[in-house]
Image (cartoon, rainbow, N blue to C red; front, side, top):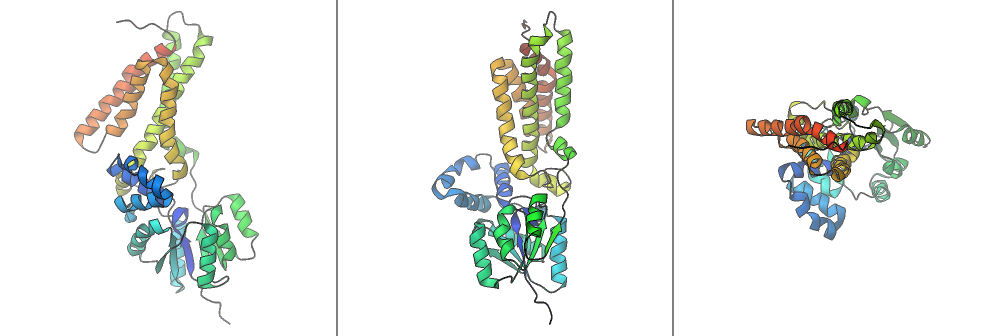
Length: 339
């Protein structure tokens, strides 16, 4: 008796694409209108996250052609289609337009199925439509466990070792697709790690140049300013790449942020939290240190693709990081600055 042909159900977030669709929509919206998230605060308060996601997706839909797909997931879809089995893409209702755009672009998806985000409700709806064990499922998150438990075949992609072990313990066949995770070099590139080393070199050099400085008590304030510059630089580097996702992906999708290897669920909060933390550390040292931080942070953001923006951004960046950085270190050391 031939085996039944199971439809392959594929999760959109983190499975077919490496990144959450909501994060893609958020950064696409901010890149086009920096005030949009603030103006959509009412949508979050009145309708919750679902309403906010729907508004973001409607106003600034990401470019489906340049989303960071998981190659292993795409290969599975092609394999399934060669066997003449159906491929169905699962998405939240607010992400349906993006899912439909992906389906139209690649031509490998037979249907887009909009289901509520709750995994238990999804599992019940799928079991009702396809029957017990009547579908195969490709997911990436532990939240999808109820759906895997209802599936006739189990596929995971980019899953942790703990999640793979839980799936192997199910009474259905499991196959794990490996995807390249973020490496230490990816994180170093995304966070502009060389800037931390340069800042450390400058501030340590100041210890030898500042006359009459007692080194032991000077280390704590100097370390605080070093952390402030490092955090601000790393947060700004992430923010710059997130704001330029579509431009980066149009030319090169191999970068750690554009490719989605650096998880957006970490990159998004870090891009917002690190600069704020840097400013908080620098605030006790006064206006000069804060000015150096502000200029250094503004430079990369202002540096747009047109010539004037690149020139202005470069001038601000160099003024903050080269000219004012040593003075910020001297302030941290308590050296009086006079004109």
